[in-house]
Length: 511
Ligand code: ME8
Image (cartoon, rainbow, N blue to C red; front, side, top):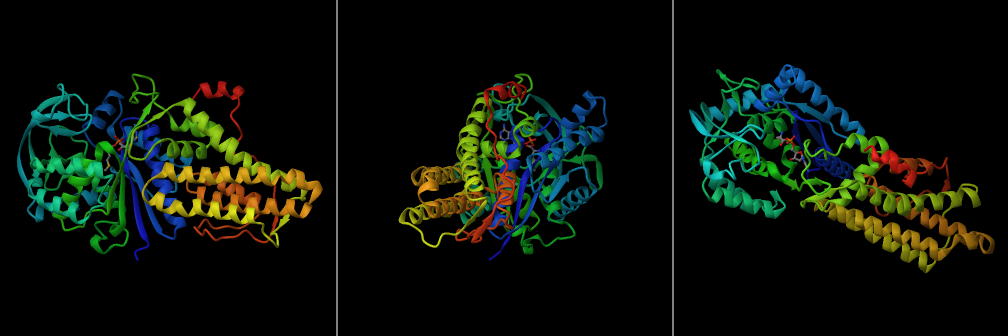
């Protein structure tokens, strides 16, 4: 079985600062990557920035900078956000890097050698913001279907023979039913193809900020062809030319927002088929975050800033909220009130308080030292079993990208742990039966440890803090039968998630 996996985020445009939407895809990929690592996979995980195109050229001019200066600045913001969000990526690719330029040139030459490129003339409605041409029939209320303003343009341009790939793509989707996730997005793509594919304009002459077309430098390569090939650059192409034999390429998953599924599930596999490289294993798409009920936009002043949330509440808090709040695939609403409510009720009151209750009790009444009990009661055994059931359902849920249901399961396991404590009442046992008191604390601590290890992909900082308090060496690997050492000697106790109280709301108002 291939135990290598390659996980990618989209590469983000450098025309605006990163916001919660970008943070979301990156965090989803990070959680998936950390989960794959704990399941024993070798993971390659890349993210980066998409820096060419007319939009960036224009933004740079508006900012009185060169496109390179402008791209350096904004790309830096995306890169700097990664440690703030605690992202474990292996690579950060910029499309302005030399290694990428080489990939684009080589890939173009391969497409050309294979006979899939020809020179023609383009006329149509061009959406600058989204860097795409549209036919008159595709316009909606005078705007592009992606919502951008359009201008009528005509230019000599190279075309890719996309029209030759309709049947091949449909056959590929049939043979690989999981290729597009979720299935609803697949239906949209299939009906688009069934309406008939036209050839795709893949070069531009109206601006120069891009990779020049090999042997015809008046043209620059269409920004989507340039951007999509980033995934090959990261995987060592063109030096590593035989991608079909590459174990990472065989298991590459592209995570994307729903608006760019067409580029990834249609254009990208067609380009790859044209040069004889197998399409990716899966295109996984998610819905959009709205902010306070509306699309995020500078003019509405409702753009949510991930830096601020992480600086004030920590990356774990934001990561948890993002994964728990949105049903993967559907749209969701980001709200400050929702964030604070979720944080307080789950991370502070339920999980954080559970940890703190048990740890402080052990510290105070057992001198920080407890041993595995010799005997378990039926209540103990039932508790172990119920928590174990929750934990064992997690891998499947993550593999189905049901991140919110995976966290719901663990929240249920936390509730069971709090109930166990309430029922066993170690605070009464401390005078009547010290041995049983210590046994219940150990049983509870062991279950919290198991839950915490399963929460690690989402809240890595708190998980590591917790195991440090237990003074144990642990590797974060998935093992539902894993046990704590028979003797635990606690280290210094720290509060994992301090409650956000009313007096913090002033700080919060600045977010
Ligand atoms: O499309 N909710 O870049 P981009 C959820 N450069 N996710 C969101 C979001 C929101 N409100 N806003 C953005 C591009 N995203 C191209 C990609 S890939 C070869 C080239 C996330 O800066 C989501 O993943 O517009 C979306 O697909 C991506 O950011 C778009 O980023």
